[in-house]
Image 1 (cartoon, rainbow, N blue to C red):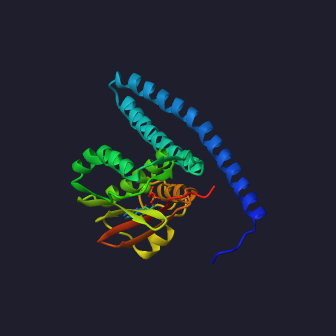
Image 2 (cartoon, rainbow, N blue to C red; image 1 turned 45 degrees about the horizontal axis):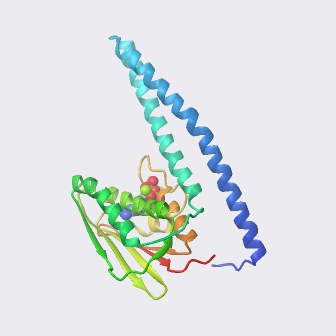
Image 3 (cartoon, rainbow, N blue to C red; image 1 turned 90 degrees about the vertical axis):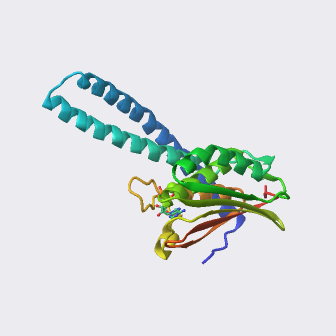
Amino acid sequence: MTSVLNTDERERLQAQNTELATLAGGLAHEIRNPLSTIRMNLELLAEDLEEEDSGRARRMLDRIGKLQNECLSLEDVLNEFLQFAKAGQLDLQECSLNDEVDAFLAFLSRQAEEQGVELRPHLDANLPQVKIDRALIRQVLSNLARNALQAMSEGGTLEFLTMARDNGIVLQVIDTGEGMDQKTVSKMFQAFFSTRSGGSGLGLPTVRRIIEAHGGTIACESEPGRGTRFTILLPTTVAP
Ligand SMILES: Nc1ncnc2c1ncn2[C@@H]1O[C@H](COP(=O)(O)OP(=O)(O)O)[C@@H](O)[C@H]1O
Ligand SMILES: [Mg+2]
């Protein structure tokens, strides 16, 4: 169901959204710094204890290791959260999406190879230029590729396809991984929804926020056991 908002209401909601994002981002920063101090001090404690050879020292090292892992996963969540909060603020530049995909694939190639995943670009040579925030679009590619690689632990293929459309361009990211059932598909864009242990559940909400901030749309088709296809439509002219 869609509701129609008038301009005043929309502007008020947007202002509220920006304020909340700023507050949330500020809070995440406040937590991140002391957290890294805690982790660094745990590391120093561990170094001291490693010099001692006793059952007590080993038990303490074990506990310190657990605390370090908790700190690391909290830092991951905070970093993803900060990216989510930043996703609505665009720094637009006219550029070629194909070049962005090419650069990203060069970066991804080693990890894909190690995981037995073949990367397949199908980039439309006649793709028009688009106005995008390059760092944020890179974030989109990275979040989608990361999910795809996690879904292909036994290897597979990961395709990146671009196509020109009447008033926009299409980007598809297609994997041959484990796929998702309908219930997962219906929840995957909800913040903090994750089926993975240690998953933040912020990867896809961030992707959607970035695409929508560009005036675009994102859709997904998925089949358990066969794979997943994300289709992104970006307009060639961005509304002011
Ligand atoms: N390419 C994919 N293949 C299979 N499942 C996926 C894929 N992308 C996302 N998902 C599902 O959507 C959920 C949410 O993804 P995301 O927002 O990136 O959070 P996270 O990766 O931290 O779990 C994942 O936990 C997973 O269940
Ligand atoms: Mg993810």
